[in-house]
Length: 108
Image (spheres, rainbow, N blue to C red):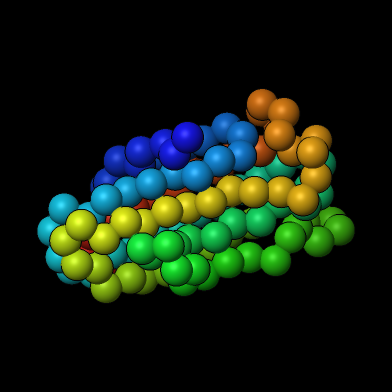
């Protein structure tokens, strides 16, 4: 089930999942996501626009404690921005293993 993101503020997620924002008014959007997990294992982030990946991260490397990614998107009204937090390891499906802060902001 996708979760709805609020714009112009930090959205905090605990766990893996897909988070969605539907654009109300056309214009440039800044989208960022920062995840941490303990211990850092198989985490990855993808930011999509209308289902097409715009930026993705490689899985967390040994010794790395977090992932950060951001992208600027030119959006039309009704475009859908999604942030997908996933992992290659089943242990990351446990609640409170992964914490992600996401921001969707209109403007440059």
